[in-house]
Amino acid sequence: MSSLMLGHEPRRWNEADTPTARGRRFVALLDAAAFGEVRPGPVRLVDEFELPSRDGAERAGWPDFALLWDDRILLIELKAEPGSHSPGQCERYLSLARHHHPGRQVDLLYVTPTMAVKALSGAPEGCHYVHTTWAAVLPHIAEAWAGTEARAESELATFLGDYLPRLDRPRAQRASSSPADGNGREAATSPGSSEQVKPPGMPTVLRTLLETAALVQSDRRQRGVDLLDQDPESLEAVRIQGRDLLRTGPVHDGIAITHVQPWIWRAVTSTGEALTESGRATGYELRLSPYRAPVAAAEPSR
Image 1: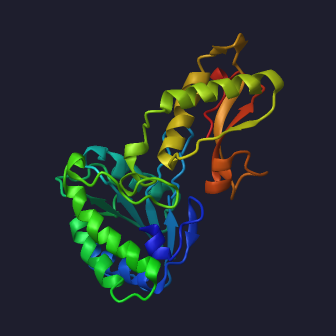
Image 2: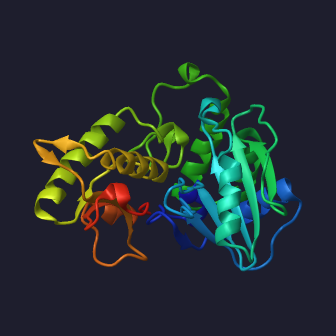
Image 3: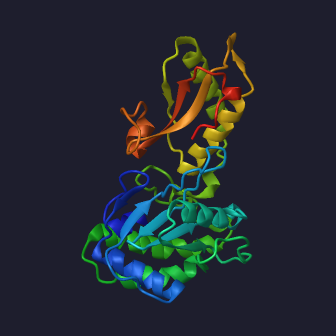
């Protein structure tokens, strides 16, 4: 979806870019159908939009998309599976967005397969929320990219027109193979899908984190943990689980890990260069740094 709207693959997480004319047309159609209006003025699209933790202890938010105007933010959260619905996720996104962007109108569009979703509870006052389905979005894709002469756009729009209706079927009834996106993932499990929030390899990731933390504890040198093929929600989950694990003072290969904490390095706001392949690709990476104070007594890391 982001590649179709931008005319190229998104470069990095949380990086604003300008949609094409057809991408802006799609945004206008989507906005009018969901919220009954078309927002004037230039709009920027962010793929994997970061809503940072307010205190380092809570979990950060990562809506799949954000559309940014000078006075408004439209968050878009996508689900490919009914089972990936997470109660309270949309409320958390709205609350974080309102906190970080108090001067803007904040709205959220939740796109899922055909399914019943309970009304929001506890959403910030003044925020608008709409739940829609892939079946309702599909005509807007067809209209916005009708007659395009760009072969890649035409092929991608055709693929989505064929694939999206399948999301209403059980996974076992879908085609056994799906075209992969630019990161080598199947389209059914694209970045941002909460299906990847707790991947099967998570225990292995934590073991890698523990091994790396032991090295940091020994030589007091900061290191990155290469989390290839991880989406932002998974990165945040590893940070939190790693933080909790390291606060217990674990021992690895005879080394007591007592002064190491994980945090998220960001290309835009942090100093230095990425230390890992995943950091260079996405602009975000998990770092492990030595701390003077024992981590059990340290402030939560962001």
